[in-house]
Amino acid sequence: MRILHTMLRVGDLQKSIDFYTNILGMKLLRQQDYPDGSFTLAFLGYGDESQNTVLELTYNWGVSHYDPGTGFGHIAIAVDDVYAATEKARERGARILRDAGPMNAGTTIIAFLEDPDGYQIELLSDR
Image (cartoon, rainbow, N blue to C red; front, side):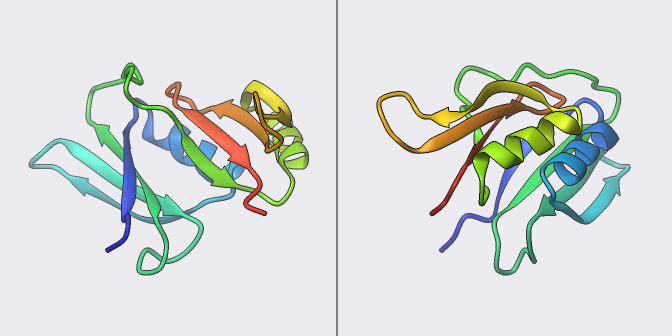
């Protein structure tokens, strides 16, 4: 067994795809409209879905806003250098919620960004 994907409902599909591809470096792996259900699914990630966990963005046609909810925490993305990745994201227009630095009560270097729909993205080194 393995985790296949995390799904987020988004209010502007293209804006969200741009964020995850241009700021976080993911690739759009596939996208499909479902006219009978009035929604579009887009799958993004850092590698082929057969070997990697991916992000599913769901756009329900005509819905432009969702509240992130109190139960959802964040999506964690491993980067080589949290400081450099944070600055690169800032230069590309990302909203930085927490600058790179040691986590509270620990030494792991982390940072937090916000995607266009208000979901939090944690950057951390996996080394």
